[in-house]
Length: 133
Image (cartoon, rainbow, N blue to C red; front, side, top):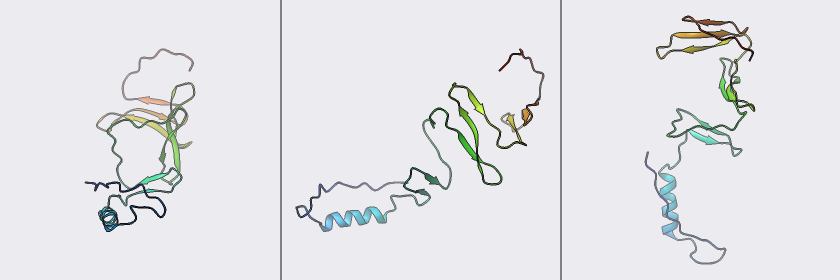
């Protein structure tokens, strides 16, 4: 997508030159008609931006401490699933009381499954040192 650039004409002062000119109005009309905006990106004016499609970033997506990544469940309710808490510990939170979470390999095979009761199933043998969390 290419963007049309706008050349600043102002400053504008009430009742003073440069006034409204055809060059200014034609440039504004050209910019607006060219679709410099994306209709699939909307904002409600309160800091909430809605994107219909994929979000790509060439950098990091950074959330402040104790703010969660939320994902909608099958019923459409946004659920907290991942965050770093005030003790700087990474928290994976279940989306509901009956589910669990899985860790999968690159092929989509489950290698670890933890159910809502805390029972863990591992694909391979586990070597563990027992300690209290």
